[in-house]
Length: 383
Image (cartoon, rainbow, N blue to C red; front, side, top):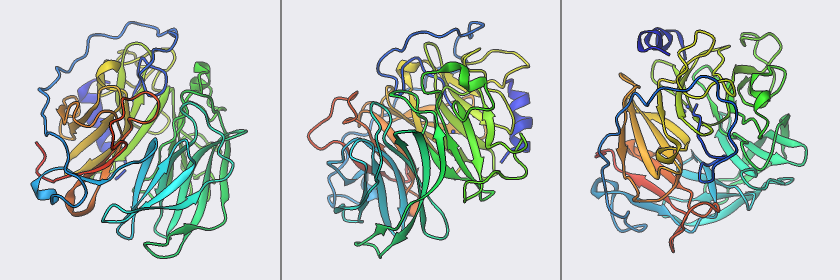
């Protein structure tokens, strides 16, 4: 995507992004190479100098204005975090637990999701909350990945989940490339990222739910204004997207793991083809929509992303960095907290204009410290 074309798309598009990486799933182990079509050019972005912040203070030791603060620690392969009524709900991929984390860092199990059978990168993945206090959950079951909805019961300190309502089943699942991020857009629709489940060709097949960004009503039905009538498919040609967010203008961004060459940040427009497995990274072809920025997998492997105050923040696993991308020029980026916290799985807006990041050092690919994994609050005065 040329920058002038991208600017036009930004005006046309829709606060909760899509990448391609050379590694399987989280990007720590190379996957077998797929046919990538035309060779991608060298990255158009020069890496910005990394900033360092030192270790985060333990719970209760500092305020956010003094520096990063650990909200809670000792998490087991956490994957997604959402805020509700002043507390955090955190999904743990392998335990199938949803933890309630209070402001003082205390943890309790709010629920254990039944029927989760994921291995590898599958399991209990993305979370989203709607205005009616219902929790939406993306997880791996015996027959594939699924999206369920649960009423949230109780008050903070005693939150629980009511009976599950399954909204969507049959999303392709495998040990790798399960996608899994869900988020509500400014249009009130629920969006979901799905991976190709190790079957690259499904990404180009619009009858398959794999390798896509899906858009649905809150009950799982197809919106009338989706780009392909009767289909949940909003965009296609994705390998393993794990990040979704919107800027203040309503533009949708997605972050995606690539295969052997490039991870990507994409601006998502309805009905567009993002190329996988025919191309990876910037292709310069009118047939496909190019990323607005790309990185080599060893420096990125992006997962969750969010928007705050005019900046897109990207959690990177293999790159072990929080990357900041200005909305006014999404072809550039700056690295924050490089190496300070290890692998970073998710990032969301926290209370009082902070950012909360969720580390991922206990997922089998990291090097966990004694306190990993952690939920960390970063002050608004970012480096």
